[in-house]
Length: 176
Image (spheres, rainbow, N blue to C red):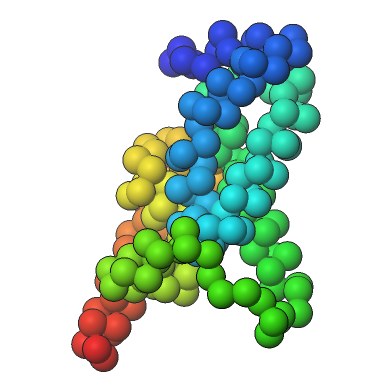
């Protein structure tokens, strides 16, 4: 399969910053969506995506094209989001934190808020698989490559993640 990003990647590997900027523009929305749905916070997602692009720029000389550039970039973003989540767990709770940013407004809507809360309760492996498949439209093969597991495992994680989401959302709806 021909990588549509290959010409830009080659230019970026030769030091063309504009080519890398085009790659960022091409992929930032999908990475941000992945990070928001994985982390549940727009601020943390923005940090994870920024970190992912920094890692990509620094790692670009080692990218050999064994997979699509977008697959490689998604994997970096998944890792950055995972690191961000670990960082959150390690930080003490700050009671003086400012109220949520207005950009978080989409999360306060009833459906979006309930869905994000349910996603937050999923095991990380299930959450990543469900978000990649259902939100970002990645194929089983792409997800398997991104997460370094077999396609059967991806299918199982999506099934179990969706089942758990249905349970969580059903419970929330019944309680309200």
